[in-house]
Length: 181
Image (cartoon, rainbow, N blue to C red):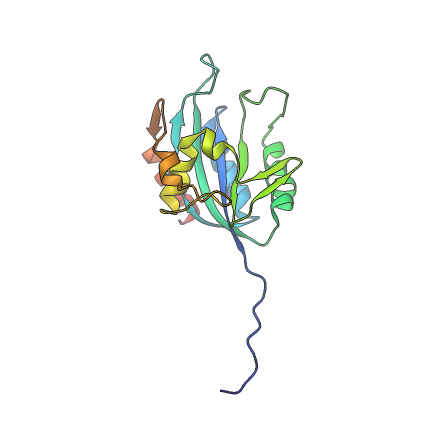
């Protein structure tokens, strides 16, 4: 065969972004997804769940879920030039209290098959193992996926989910319809 060799351009990286809120969660998750859609290509949305706050019995419950996306941004620009500005625009204030109530929390859970340990950015996000409901959401979107670096199946982590985990079917459906997913 003769001809011009095929040259491939850059490939969009698959990413999984965790979304969570316990201050007007339905409104704030919707706003975050609309803002996120302008920055990355959203490809799927997990079921959203109501979860109990960690170590904060008096706090309002959280609503958590995961968006699958494709992006040409590297992980650091995605976190600091896309996700953090969306959080700030929605009034997220970061304090020393990691578990304080929040309007929106956006985290890169997985970025392609990257393993990264940098100041302010660890991939895969350690919360996937600490909060099995996040692994459950990712596993719903990509069955059979294993954690980069360890090869640990997300399915096994997801099975460790404890505590109240209430699926929010109507919210999930409304968000998927809003985004055409």
